[in-house]
Image 1 (cartoon, one colour):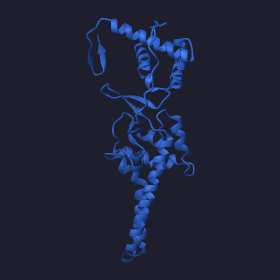
Image 2: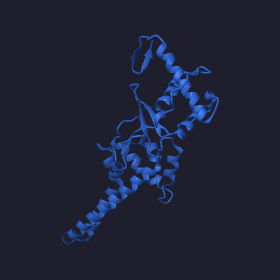
Image 3: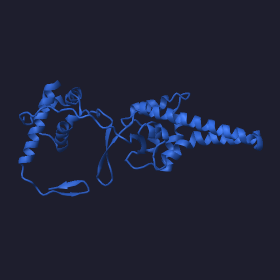
Image 4: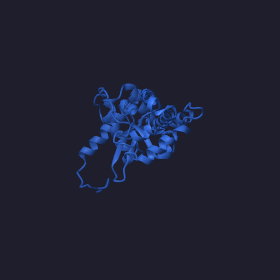
Length: 256
């Protein structure tokens, strides 16, 4: 059975307590923009510090100032992202401006050790010759856009502030169509979610998703969208007519 990858960057993560959360993964382009902003911030900070050290050089001497300057450059280059990402923000100023955040793969805040691993591995991600070829290749080959440093540290970069999605009118109500085959509980929920979320998508997006399960609808294109919507309507009608059963929930497990 062929496994179909998800069409968007919305990833589901199940926590130890059985709670499922959804995270919007950040791709390489927006992360590159955050990196350039952080680079600009560091250059400006080093420029200001350099001016201050230049004025202090008259009293301290050239060699002392050179040593302090090298130490400041080392700390800014290696520990600038570590300090910010391991802090309360979970992101560097550049990432904050781009609406990004670094977290663990399970959705928890990252630790200081993870921040060190993912950023100290940046030297390898930047290869060959600081082109970040390895890092980009790793991002594009991972469904969570994890570079080598993220894979080693078990971290991901996600959107911290999601933009509001425009609501587009969903297809009009139609007559219910029975399911041609039996579906599992997960497949039934996916069919109902397709109908419930269709108002957030354009017509082209609906067709793109519906064409992935043309084996159920039997037709492609807009006709396939309409058939799936009618099948979801039939499933929901059956659920509303069914007698209500007592359901006990414990840690995400349902028993009837």
